[in-house]
Image (tube, rainbow, N blue to C red):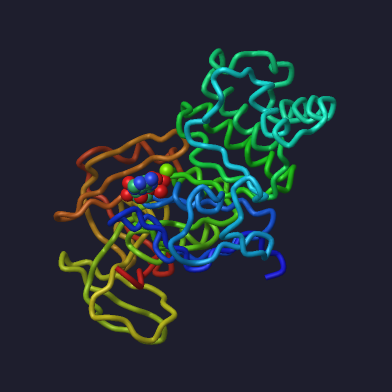
Length: 359
Ligand SMILES: Nc1ncnc2c1ncn2[C@@H]1O[C@H](COP(=O)(O)OP(=O)(O)O)[C@@H](O)[C@H]1O
Ligand SMILES: [Mg+2]
């Protein structure tokens, strides 16, 4: 494709018995903020290392700028990697760390000085060139690692959980900075994280990985609103899952009955479904009420067993028989209407029900 910058075609990488990356195919477009999201051990780092050339695939093809690069060594690939543990050279100061790659390429001293100074400015560390890296905070070390990669002006920057070691406040700040840096420079970012919120807020596109495979590829809203599997819906955000038997399906309206007596209605595209299916409803799509709503489906009566204030929203946990349902209520003014152990009615619209096609 014209706009494509990185393409993976059925890439597989094994370590002994373990298949770290299992027939992964992906296309990443120039200028995209592309995240690879998945639990620890699912193969994210291996995938980045394959693109960087630090690992060789057992099978499959890797293209960069539409050229096959399987046998191109790492230093000749137009990509740079920012490692999870920063991997700064401890015996060098900040300037020397950033200048290292340029010196190897035998660039003139004046040019190196200029580029290092620009890179330091980009990451907000102007004037810190002579500091020892061992005297820097975690956040500052991560900025040096970032500058060291950016100074080479790669087309693609590979970032392996770059904010993982930072505390929450600094992480949030760095998320904003990284995102605006990426837009400003127009570099393609391939960003690895296990943090679903980070991936949702930063990315143009997300690939959700599990056990070496891509489970789903899409924009943040596609992934969140239309998860393709139970794994994706559970991994991203909170989801209420209702497994049930198919009662009827006509005119794209599907009705499921759960074993605990809830009748669930959903809008669907396909004309056939298996006898059992899983319905998913996001907590913010559910309304909570003290009065019985005028509904016969997508409705249940339960007891509040937990109320958590999350700043701008309240989270309720409502128990129905052996089931707990999570609800997010944006209108905190209604807090006084509710208390623990209270009987309430919860309901949702039939077009807020997502039927998971696979399980
Ligand atoms: N060099 C290696 N030797 C043996 N096993 C490895 C090696 N690198 C990764 N693995 C294994 O491959 C799988 C994927 O690892 P990794 O890509 O690091 O996952 P993630 O970054 O998603 O946590 C894991 O089971 C891991 O133990
Ligand atoms: Mg990793």
